[in-house]
Amino acid sequence: MPKVTVHRKAHFNAAHRLHRDDWDDAKNKEIFGKCNNPNFHGHNYKLIVSVTGEIDPETGYVIDLKILKDIIKSKVEDDFDHKNLNIEVEDFKNLNPTVENISVVIYNRIKAHLDPKLKLEITLYETPRNFVTYKA
Image 1 (cartoon, rainbow, N blue to C red):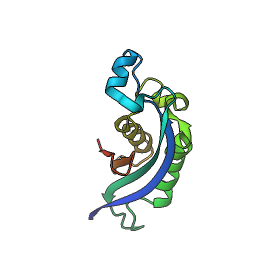
Image 2: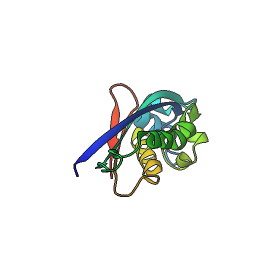
Image 3: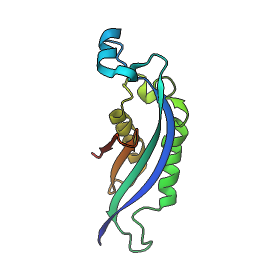
């Protein structure tokens, strides 16, 4: 059976601050610049979730996109949208919410709900020109 990749787009708006408590203010400002604003700052994140697998001969699906939509909504959008990631999302209590770390957290949250035979890739846009891709 051929392998196919299906994609689902999503988005969320969230605030964060790039900061390390073990660094002094000068080093945080030097490394993270404006992203270290003590009053936080926000982004309109765009997310692309890509799932690769064999086409099921009975359904014709790699994954039912309604199921994928529901996973993204419950595990990402509901928990991240209009939140301060540093303060309101447990995953970032001890993890700097860089776009790289956010993409890994999203990957892990979604992967836990997929059939293990499916491959997952996350592309997360922090801005229209800055984005990361993660797959394990």
